[in-house]
Image 1 (cartoon, one colour):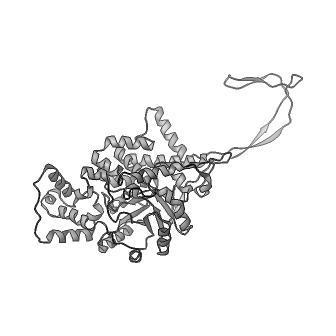
Image 2 (image 1 turned 90 degrees about the vertical axis):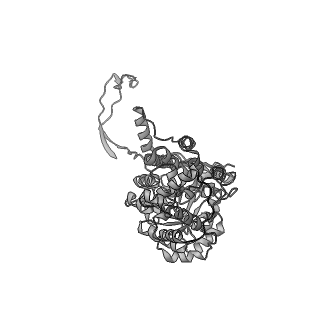
Length: 473
């Protein structure tokens, strides 16, 4: 903003006082008179600082604090998880929090961020900042997506639907989980025109895979994320100790029970006549499991209690859930079935990243599945620089696993990630406050990222590079 101010000075003696009366200062020359000055025009330049996501979030919190209100969920990641642990039952918390084996990979994902320090720069104009990026034809508010988290009904009744609404209100893409508790069509309807992707587990039924991919396209998904690190379920002691797999109870299979191909497979299984295996004596837990299965299957609950279909659905799912035999040769088949961009999730070796691009894939996601699949795996962030080098700018490289804060987003992007996927933190927000809890977590991460960008002397995401970091261990 440019303002012209005309100043006129007269020879006066006396004292200039500020209006508050706190400071009085005498301005005199050696003769005891104030110096004369001629009329002159002074051009002043003032810049209006447009508050970014960080200052907006701070203002919102601190203003609410004046009225005695604090954030709905803890802002710090560790406190957020601790509060969610108290709110959830043991099975739900173990499923979301747990990792493979001794959870070395899970800890390594976090420790990898501690190896890097940010080196701020000063005296740069950062009053206006742009945290947005473009990805697959969409302008996104920040390099952040909500990653796929399965069986969210364990932590909140509204599950994926609450997450979808929160993501849409923030303009952040949601990656629909293949193991969702709400169908992709219902989530898409709640999101309007907001961006969304779909995560695919490659089933043993190619017909089912084709159906899921077609539905994702019809639901307005912008990309397809093929998860390759879960062709078999990892060894997860927390779940094993509790004897708990949500899918065996009919939870987290809504994408399947809403699919016409899967429903036909279930009906065929239920209709098949064969010798029944001896059944153990019913227990209260078994009865509760049957009730849960009946609720998961579409249709009237009472009819489902008497129907063989709910149980057949669980058995069908467990039989076709994933395909260990998938190879590079299968990608051409998938490519021929969809026009959507395809990203491979679970890539940790640079040779696999090169091969993926050679096979016509549109991007890769560096991921350890949140440390849930292979214990003592390389950490995702440790693998990122080599994979970025192998891809050499030919396609987007996203990072998943270990992201907890806006500062983590900054570090990952500086090391070459196009964007990152956030997982457990939004699930904890969901557990504590539903849609509003998810939205707060998103806002907190975006706010810290914006402030970190500015406080380190940067105004745009494309200014970040490894040069802004120092390796400290």
